[in-house]
Figure 1: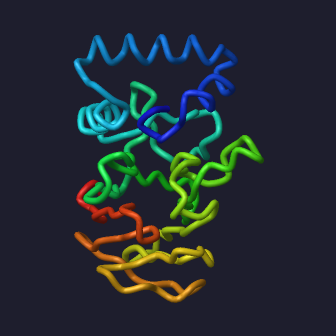
Figure 2: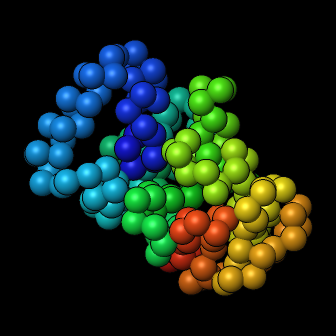
Length: 185
């Protein structure tokens, strides 16, 4: 959950345990793994697995599940911006699109496939979606306030824009900058 960008309060609500218990577990995990913060822990997890834990009961039968219960992403966004943000966003397509946004504490449950923490203000609640096509991938800005950028150029809202290996994708202008990597396909 930390690798997916969940905050302690979100984790406590999802696991039905107290906020203090979550903090204690996270402190223990930091000690056992030798990391100092959530970003380092997420980076360590993602670099070790290159996949993300998923509730396999909610997946359609056509999504391959590895024997250990993980799902391998077909692409990944690797952080090159603000080091306080998740170091990678694994793209696991349950259907043909993958939405990216910011967690909304007013709703209190996930609205997108990947959500930045609530404090990531430059990212809109439903910011962009990446679409898997037969000939590659495209990205669509979902009318976000701060915009979505490919290699520094703002893309028009609601238009499909093709993305390629090593394109820089920016969600807003506050450091949510990632490199698109399809080498996992």
